[in-house]
Length: 395
Image (cartoon, rainbow, N blue to C red; front, side, top):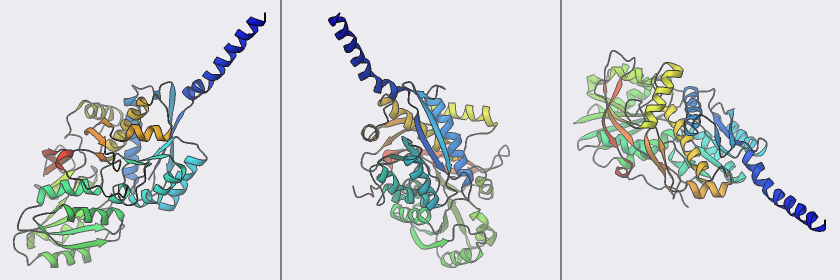
């Protein structure tokens, strides 16, 4: 009888040891998505959310579970306001007890959020905020980014216009996004000359004065003359109303969301480099996302839909590798140097600064009556290994 008692005690001890693992397995994986559900970049934020949810479903085969743990996404609206974003992230980590967070949409919000991730020692996967400083001098080890950074934008766009005898004026928003973008662009330009930088308030609607200053800087110069635009939201292409052609001035810019690219129809032949356009990448993940988006929304996925999808692919890849373990240090060591499939093809988190190395797409705008926007026709894919993207953090 005494022996039976010992056996039963031993069985209880074994089951008690197994309980935490079983409880952890059944516990939800909680992800906060903090983005501009409203505010100036609402369109970008909503696309990211759509892509994130589509990507989580795709990457988990529709189960929304990893190793028996259900994925729960908690949405929070930062309205594009840095202080609000910072407080929402603190509440997500502290009150909601999320395992990690994704977002935000705007670079100033992201910069406000970075120290919060470090304080709570939890991962913040940045998507789609672009400023170089996020994975540069303001970076900490809890920050990863699937979104492209300003340097990737700049280096790929420089490919399109960086030739001898070209004079360039940059026009950008007076913000972290705009200024980091221009700095990276100037660093990437080797042959052409940047003769002026024009910074305007982010909410500018009247571009007349700025356009006149840019025209004055370019109009008397020999050779090819270009205004390169770095802008988020609004319609900076109103500067074309100033009859730039009369002075032989061209416009160049990167890719954008489809509604913004309606304005590109004014500029057939315009060259630039895009982060994404649904018709460019040729891979199974993109095919699946495009088909699913058409099925759900009767329209193609957009610029930031691909970003949200990529973030989901990164998270699920990492969590599958850890068997659903959300321990922050384990996730960091798993994600550093990790490659994962996305609608843009393979991305890899660079170990030094956790920036996702990824392809960009050199395009030329063509007019197709079947589309409401200027269609970016692929000239060539610019592979990650072709872009010498600087490591700007101080690790």
